[in-house]
Length: 504
Image 1 (cartoon, rainbow, N blue to C red):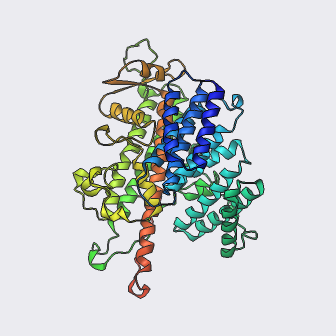
Image 2 (cartoon, rainbow, N blue to C red):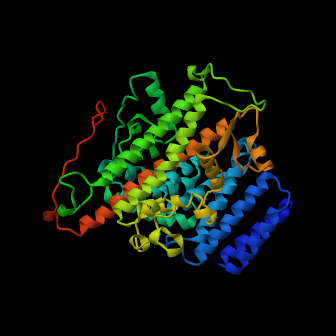
Image 3 (cartoon, rainbow, N blue to C red):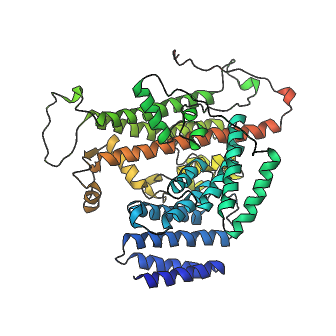
């Protein structure tokens, strides 16, 4: 397909969108599917996936679901899926050889969609990627500012709220100065005025304290690595990669329980579950850092004097690879454990053997039964974000379509580490992607060392987001409870932090 035909199709799609013609849009989706079967350049492939995403976005808006609180939306799922396909293709094209703004539009739209469903932390990271390359991309600046506003409303720490509201004000103001599309300008101006009613952000001053990243050279390197990859359980790490965000300050929020339901004065078990999830996350995070840093050194002494045969195909056997595998498995296991917290707090009463992150949202743990009563009418934004994270994974027996194009790849990595044989190769010497596409892999699965690191990093980022969303979802529920109870009927129970130097 030549450029002129593709441009003509794009024009027809735009006309159908402007006319809110759902029939025509679905017809054009069929044309795009046909076009996908041609031998296309990778840039044209990316454009076609972007056009498909736009079609699904238009269908969603035609049916007036763009403002709804439906927990499930097939068109939105398809929109996100095709935006991700387009983005994955564009990541393989050097920025220097791409003279269009397509990659910025794709990432901005993907961020907008994720933010809509409550995955604001991940959306901010995407907008930041755009602004790193294109600082004056007004729609990313403005939409990011809106996300800061709604993020602030979810936070339980007043200090963090204030910081996010300030960032929101200045981002929206900058977007207006840069110039946004007419339909967005009025809304941004209204929100800017609303923010000024809350505070004079022009005179707001916040001094980022200079804090230590640790005593040893290694600890400083570790904390810098966590900051750079946004891996601290700290909302400020979604804003900055500076010292003030280099700690895991995020916790389980204050909760209200009836006295008769308390366990002889012990804290509610939700705090213990969240403690464990947090500890497992930070341990998996460090294990990956340890694996990466060790990979740059010589052979570890534990790998010496171990008799192995050279298979003549550049596969690797090293301690650091096993550490990376353990970090991957440790991170992946946290999702099902988050489901235990969801089951406990929202009183779903699922039997322990049936609790899974993918299915805990449904009546009796089965998607065919529909959402559990606790969620059906809920307008808890971060809780919906947590639910949409569950869509990232392969469903029961692979029947449900995942939201993530890499979902099968992630599933294969986990299954082969746990039950089969993950073969790790030197990424410089072996093209494992081509090898995987060329043959079946029933009991063994080839992957490069760099892919293993990248997928584990991606997984850790997803776990971090899930831990933030579940805490903020509980805070949202508790805020509603507190608003319905007379303050005179509430008492306080003080919880104490575990000393860093002495873990019980």
